[in-house]
Length: 271
Image (cartoon, rainbow, N blue to C red):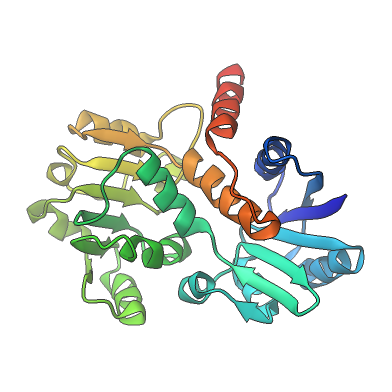
């Protein structure tokens, strides 16, 4: 039985084993997928030990995505653009690294019938979560992709890195005078139930997406709904979507995400 792991710190909360085991059932695959807590100074040794024990692949979550990238012998285009890796494949040719976060986000938005082609998209935050989704979003040919961040210079660094004519940077004060079709929250604000400094006028009649998920809508999504957002979506579908992309890399078949999403939603309801 092929062995897979997800590495992280913390890792206890990870849904990846449930997701991948459900994918395996629906795709008639037999896998052993577990989660492993790793310390920063031990991550490389832990990965190498897993490879030596027959591991076929691994997912990587915070805080190891940059370290994982440094271990790779070959990187996908998305991994290079993101500057981080969340999917490792162990082959005779070495360690292959990919980043499926952005494709998972795009898949989830499209599954919710959100139009990205020709859309004015606002991406909130200028950290790793934002960087990882910029290329897949640009690949959807939006009218514009605007990065907003409290520190404008950090957003501008991403614009300078990607050098795309549809990519621009602003600070939150400038959202007062702009209109968007889709707003994506890639900040960590929802983890602490705080709100970013987004102008309420920017939210009216928009699709608002939060990469964070939970049993209830996040504080950001509740606020967006109060401001007149057209649609609110949490990040659970992105989580399952990026996992589906990883599964496809390893097994050559992309699983249906709907049954797994339904299972996770039910688990949230049951507490």
